[in-house]
Image: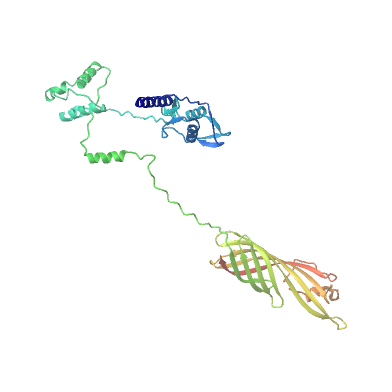
Length: 411
C-alpha cells in the first residue's frame, strides 16, 4: 500500500513538471527595453532584449551586420523596433516561434553582386587539306570538347579511300557537308589557311606570356624622389669688414653685418686732423652672381676746438661742432668669393654750430671768411652753403665718392 502511494506521487510530480514546462511561452515584441541613453550597437541591443524579455535570438553574425550603431535619445526601444532596424541594414527574413526569433539572410544585396563577363572566343577555321589524318582526328576530338574549332572537309583535296569509314560516318562532318551543299549559293567558299609548324610547349608558354598585357593592378616600380633643388637666394647672415676711403675723411675702418635685405654699418674715419665714428643702415639687391646694388645712409658727430684773439689780444675759446649725414648708392663687385669691392657716389650734408665761451655765437667779427678759419672738415667744393656771419650755424652739401674694400664672411 505504501509502495503504491509512493509510485502515485512520483507520477503526479512528473505530470506537473511536464505540464509546467510544456506550456508555450508567448513573447510580447512591443514591450519596451530600458537602456542608458546614447549610442548602442545592434548586437548589444539584442543581448539586452534577451535579458529583459526572455527572447532568444538565433542568427549568424558573419552573414548579418550587427555592428551598426543606433542612437537612443531616451534609452527606450522595443523588440519590434530593433527587428525593423535590422531589416533596414540587412536583407533578412525574421520568423518568431514562441519566444524564439530566428533571423536568416534571404539573399545577396544588389550592390554586392558581381556579374561575371565572358568574352566569346572566335572559332578557328581549319582546312583539313593541309593536315594529316591523325591531325584531323585530334582536331575533331578537340572540337567536341571545346566547341571552338570547326573543320571544313575539302573533298576535292582528300581521297575518300584514305579516310576511315568511321570518320565518314561522323554526324558533325556529314551534317556540315550537307548544310554547305544546301546553302552553296549563299555561303562563300573559305580560303585554305596554312597552319603554322608545330611549336614546342615551352616556346608556346613563353610566347603566351609575352603576349599577355600587364595588369592594371600590377606593381609598378616606385619613383625615386628627386632631390630638392638648392635655393639660390638663401637668407643668411654675413659680415663684411675692411677699409673705406672717401674725399672728406680720407681713410677708415668699415664693418657691415646683417642680412642682404637689412644690415647695419659702423665705421671709424679720420683725415689726420679730426676723427669721426659713423653708424648707419643699408640694404642690397642682387643683380647677378657677381654684382649687387647697395643703398645705405650713416651719420656721425665731429668736433674741433681752438682759440682766437681780438684786437685787444684777449683770447677766447671757440668750439666747432658738426653732424655729417651721408647717403650712398654703391655697386658691389665680387672678384672672388671672399673679396668684395663697393664703389659709388655719396651725398653729404654737414650741419655746423659755433660756440664761443661755450655759448652759441656767430662769427661776425671774422666777417665773410669765418667758416674757412673754423671748421671740422673742409669739403673740396659745395653745392649749397647757408653760412652767414650773423648766424651761429650753417648747412653745407656736396657729392663725393667712396670706395670700400671688404672681406666677406657668411654664417
